Length: 199
Ligand SMILES: [Ca+2]
Ligand SMILES: [Ca+2]
Image (cartoon, rainbow, N blue to C red):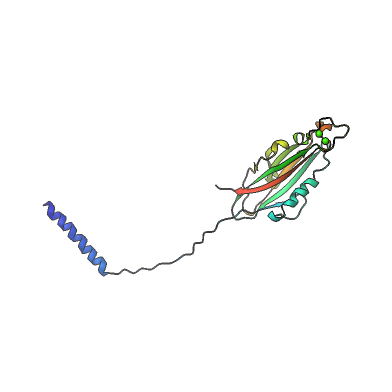
């Protein structure tokens, strides 16, 4: 009984194959264009008092503007700097900021300044870094200027395509800073970055 069942199954398969070989079905296809294009991040920066959005090619000018706006600080003084950033790319990003290449110097040592003059300004000057838009700012980081060196500070919210936001840096010299910072100086670069938001 069992061998005959096996033979019957084989016969069925052969018959089906014969039908398939003698009939051609219609076939058609369509081609859709599907380009793979990588998105881009493109950060623009606008310095305080400037109407111009700056791109990579003119980045060195930002440093000199910053330097000229921070001279002759004195104890008890607070200066606020608003630097705008804009995402001109095609994917959302997260802005970041870092104070890099920091160089501290004692400068001259006038009579009221105590010795040794080790260039104490960076340890005494305070900086608060905030981020936001439309007058609504969130605190990002704070401390002495020296303590913030090389730290990459991340914006608390993404910067969407086409959106603008502002980094607010508040520099202050405590009233009790005293004579030890006379003519001391701190020079650093401000690095503005934009990282991909979704990783
Ligand atoms: Ca000093
Ligand atoms: Ca000095």
